[in-house]
Image (cartoon, rainbow, N blue to C red; front, top):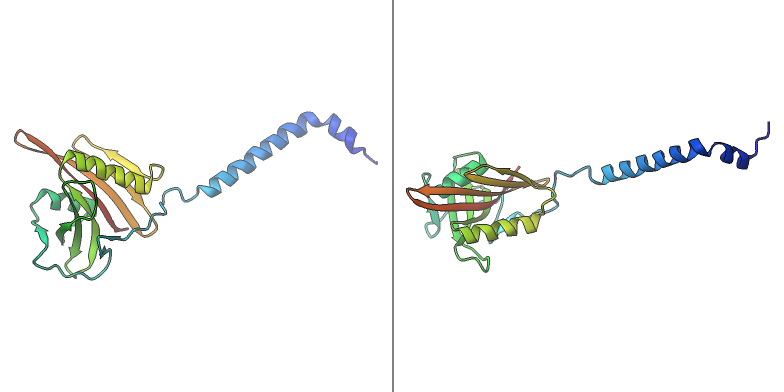
Length: 186
C-alpha cells in the first residue's frame, strides 16, 4: 500500500485547499485576538499633574483656591469620583494656550490625594481640554456617554481611571459649561 503523494494531492485538492484556507483564517484570528486581548486598558500611566501626585500625602494650605461643596466644580468632581467626602482645591495650571484652566486636586479626609486633573469653565478651553485628553489616551480604548446636558469620556489603565467630564450649565438665561479632566484610582 505505497501511495504516491503527488497523486494524492492532485486527487484530493478539492478538500485540502479549502481546509488549509480555513486553518489559515483560524490561525490569523487567534493571533489577532491574543494581541488585542487587553483592549480595555490604555498604556498611559500618568499619575502626577503640576507637581501633585495621585495617592500622595497632601496638606491643604490657605494659599490655594478651595471650592465649596455647593459649587459647580465640586459637584462635577464628586460625580466623577462617586464621593462627596473630599476637599477640592485648585492651582494655576502650567498648560499653555489655554486661557482659563486650573489644575485641581481632590484630597480625602485623611490627607491623601484621590483625584488630580484640570478644570476649565469656558467653551474654547473645554474643547481644547477634550482634544488634549483624546490625544493623550486615544480613541480606541475610550468609552463615551453623551447625555444632553453632559458628556463623559473615560479610559482605564491597570492602576488609574482617566475621565473627561463636560457639564453644560444654565443660570437663568446664561448658558455655560464646566469641564474637567480627572485622573483617579480605579
